[in-house]
Length: 324
Image (cartoon, rainbow, N blue to C red; front, side):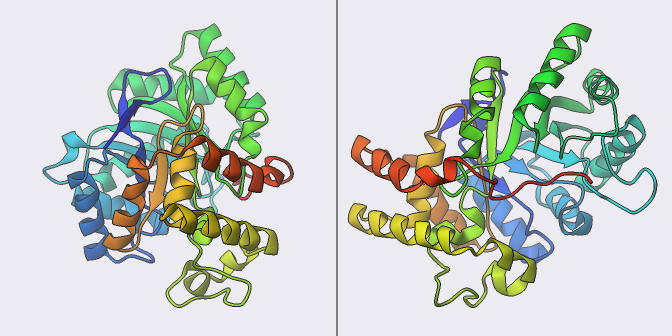
């Protein structure tokens, strides 16, 4: 396994991280625990979850999986998206974040999280309130580092400016949809992160599995796929994404690789990227993804991937989660 600093922080994270959105939903408890253990045995130390994944089941299962192994994990969780329909059931107010952090710590069976992330920008709460709350979390020892997620470049820069002005802990990372099928972060977010020393943590690095080649225009619901178990995923199966996946697949075949491995290797090599979150619902998927860590792309292959994905530099992101 290879490791990098998380942004400009001293924390070292594996270049491939484990996403756990499927734990307790598309992967049962036994399978999920086995995936966590297999990942850590192979050197993956970054494990990412959130307070709302699988209705809190993901955090609970991770808590079980890390018993006796907590000190070897860089554990990241999030809060801020809709948790419940109460008046304070979402956002990044002090009220909501304090409650959610305590609940996450209980489910995760730990007294601290290594990276606590705001799941999305909250237009209804002053950034000063959010950042002061996060600074207090760090001072208390319950959080070691803080990060953002689904922030626009200007929102991230504003937050960094406030932290510098007030002397608060600053965001060391930001999560964003980023892949060959979504290169929109390269327009503004990547330059800001490079300038400010913020690490990018891509989610949906395989465009929800589209870039593995499992979907095609003739088979949009292959057996066992996310499209079959989650009907809402159908909105992502646009012809242009399927065509890109086909082109990546052809290039991968020429390289003696797989489209998923090639796509992840490309993303791992992008500027400002610290760790790439990849989910798994079975152990074999994890094994396939790990091959990307040691795959070095030659200039011709990297250039070809850039060429076939150029149209995805502009337009709407593949995914974006925001509060109404």
